[in-house]
Length: 357
Ligand SMILES: [Zn+2]
Image 1 (cartoon, rainbow, N blue to C red):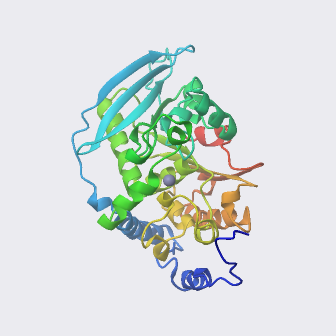
Image 2 (image 1 turned 135 degrees about the vertical axis):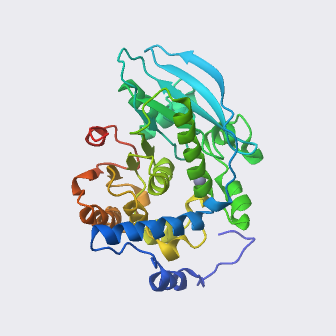
């Protein structure tokens, strides 16, 4: 014990009260539908509610002004472009686009691949194994799904989410490994929330703008755009697919669990997960339910610490909420829940979903 403090025998915390409050007030806009028509009616109002909560109405549009700043041919014939697009006035998003070699006359399919935390943004997802700090993260989380999917013949678009990689705010703008790998979500949340915005809302907006760019570029197929994301990338995929019908299929890996155990009790998670008023309206399964009847694959790792106190059950319960939406829309076969063994990581086997796009 320190000789500069005293020992506290009993702590008086707010958690028990807040948990009771959660039980009393959470999920006021939960999925309620016993028929296809009721589901569509619920989804329409739920999307509007979710957009408002995320502050989507505060986002400002702008010309995309795309600029291809790099074009590299990699060993396996994949072209890696770095394109910078303007997502809001004076807000720019660098994106790696991995374009596989193709002899086919058919347009290639596109997969948007948002990243999560602790991988230096797009560098891990796009497979920059030449950067040692990134290579370690790729190996730890199996993080390079953008590159893996490009090798399977998809055009993959791997953006830097706000606060990551080349988009870090001042606080972490250094080349030190811990700064390079990490993100300024905390600073972004502080800037956004008092203005009625949210980090999730900003991320979803940027992915919508990236979709605008795919359509504007008009080189690849645009009627079957998919989105694949792990961890915080799963978070982005969840909300993006829930709100934007242009996403025709989604893989949400390591981000589907009840918020009470995973974000309220585990209240040290990154600030980008927390949005004012969100839990009063929805749990995660309700948001996932907005994706129906489009194909979705949920990947849950059995020993993922983010599942919370009760473990995998906390993920299964949310998928069960989603399943109601898929049942009433007669699309049960489009919701795939894959429980994988091990801790928080991405599993490369998403073929069941890829067959549906
Ligand atoms: Zn974050």
